[in-house]
Amino acid sequence: MIVSGIASGPARATALSNAEATFLDQLVTASAVLEQRCVGYEVDGAGGVQLGARLLGSPDAAMAMIDAYAAAIKARDGESYDPGKFRPEVSETAGKTFRRVRADLIKDPKGACADYGDTSVDRGLLRRY
Image (tube, rainbow, N blue to C red; front, side, top):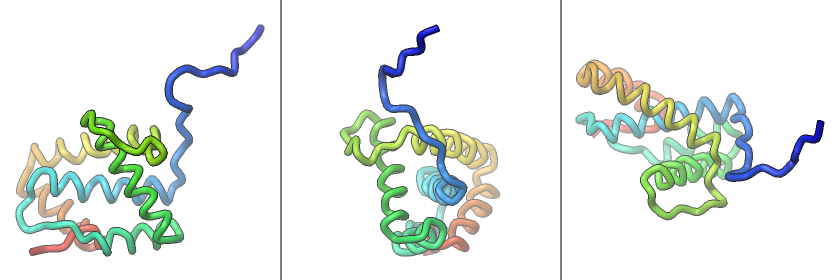
């Protein structure tokens, strides 16, 4: 049996590390809170980078994950993005997390906004205004 080593389409996705998956989950959750316009929350960019640096080992690693998530959003929306920053595994994982959190936010807007929003504040990704 001959197995071809040539793959068509995008390169095969690699698995996220546990730290990457944790940070991405937290990042996506915070962005879903903002996307659903939960009242009283805004992004805390410095806090997000600090959290990512603690989880991933450096501010550069945190920014790389943030950039990969931004590229995934742009790709999904049909906007131009830097293909060097796009990671299929980030796009796939982020999409699943976003759909789950958004469903909770739609089902129970007040309760889920408070739960997810306050958790994101505690982690440093969002702040209250």
